Image (cartoon, rainbow, N blue to C red):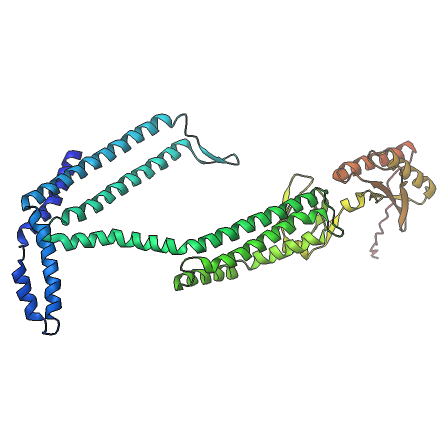
Length: 449
């Protein structure tokens, strides 16, 4: 099949050569001079005659040097060499594909990022094979495109077509080379700007890391501000760098470049209104310092531990292992209770409490003793400051007592409350007191005579 394809290509290339070579007569110098002389005026006759003479002499030297059959033989040799070279390239690529299939089992591995398989080994091999196939076809096309102008330049009738084909290759390459040469100074400027930016960012990252680890202390600047401040400066610095580089980019003043810039700006302005709001709210929350990672907080009746805090959202993990996500705009407009702020070294601790109601027949002093002893027996309750009792209500048939105690183990508050309730029940049972309070209901009887 391959031999038939190459034979057809050979016939296809030789046919226009034979036709153009036979149909195009060689124009003599006398005919050219006569035809030209009729169309020119007397003022430029000598100049045109001289140019025609030089052109005719060059053509005669080029044409008469080789006979038609010699040029035809050269063309056939070029076609044969092209066919052999293409077959060699295809053979080498075939061997490379076979070698790739044999070595793929051991040397080529799956593409995995953060334990997520993006491409399996077989998919990677298939992608490489497709890339090799594209390169093979591109090389074949380039060889054809180079060989055709050379073949057509052998014959006078197709020489202009050969020059046209060569211009398709040479002119773009020349333009690319000249534009690249002219762009080198701007390229150096861009490289210098990027290098300076990278070193400035490295310096900022160094200081931010020292501040975050507490090795560098700045008065009024908290350690949790280091990372977000570095990110803000990083974004601003890269934005400033892009503003400096933009005029140095090729065709930055073109209408197409401006159109793309305007389109991107419109997309961001329309589609990112809420995102920008959350971003700004995230910055405000960061510098307000209402909580930090690991704190136990309450936001909109949801109590949990802060497991993630970024410029867009905050995530809480509840005691039931539920993850609740709050956009920063909601957090900024909500009340936030942080239970960890009372556990600092200079604080006494968080006060937790429990309420019981007991009838008036039991002396309040005895109730106070039972509740305080129950609190002192509870694990994770501090002995100092000492627990205390508040009487919060005096109802018609009972009084309401509230035991308050201090703790710094806010991460296990539900467990502490459970232990406290158990000790309160044990205390009343040991004292022989009933925790039930008297409740009365008045029933209105409708007496009918």
